[in-house]
Image (cartoon, rainbow over all chains, first blue to last red; front, side):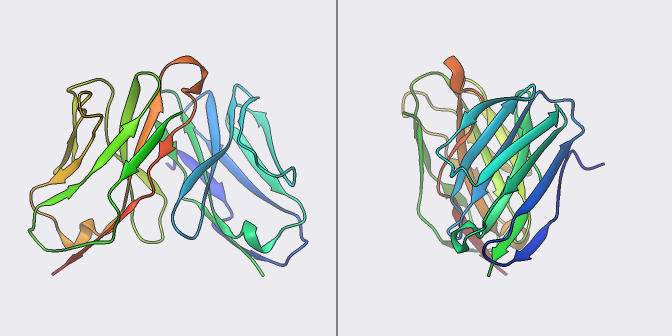
Length: 109
Length: 115
């Protein structure tokens, strides 16, 4: 069973479109995250939710909107996609140690 | 603030060579330290961790010791294999105050092991 699963794994879309990435964890963790990995492999946190409450929002453009319908889910919606949004987006969850999903490779053309 | 500095890559080794990837950190509190590994085309996997000074984390032949005096958490393996080729990330989580909900990552070190 996959502990942190995110879909889709690959997404190619045009500039200006709106897209969502979904994430689910079956570990019973209270805290979930979205991280962005750029083309140089650098990882940076975008958002963190604890018990469905937003606790970290790291200077991410307003076009990015996370939504946590329950503790086990944290979805990422992106409006008006730009070329610079092309990256790998990782969902993660934690109680103590942080566990990552397998990533969603987003390419904006 | 918190930061992690790890050695620049890429690192290229022959099979069975000894590996060291240096990692040093700056933290305002009392961090937990982690090494994550990312194999080509895959997500991040936890490799090992240490939660307090002098702890040694180990897994799959890799080890790292939490050195508070030198603020370091260097990754070592005595004999690397081709299958160890991946990007390795050092990370810290500051356990003080409200910042314990996120990891701060180093920039990653690409390791290539040749047969």
